[in-house]
Image (cartoon, rainbow, N blue to C red; front, side, top):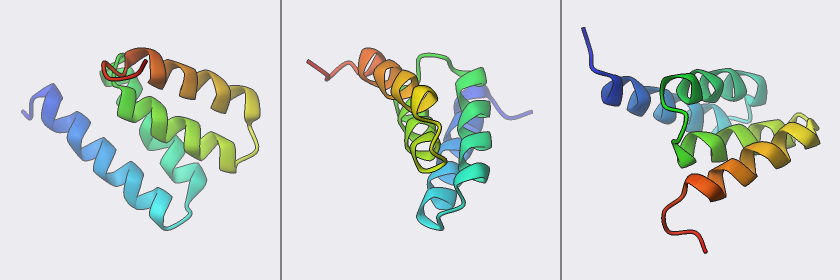
Length: 76
């Protein structure tokens, strides 16, 4: 059984592949799964925000991008 960190990495890679292919809905679903696995993952929140933005779900995008900034240890 793969550990949680490996699962997160797979979700993140897949999500960003979907973003690069402009498959916004698929990307959003994958990033939601990543966030369920690890709530404080700033990269997952960022991907969720980007995909939500392209789907014109602006409130969700804003919330996700704000959480991405909060959980990013390098943000100021």
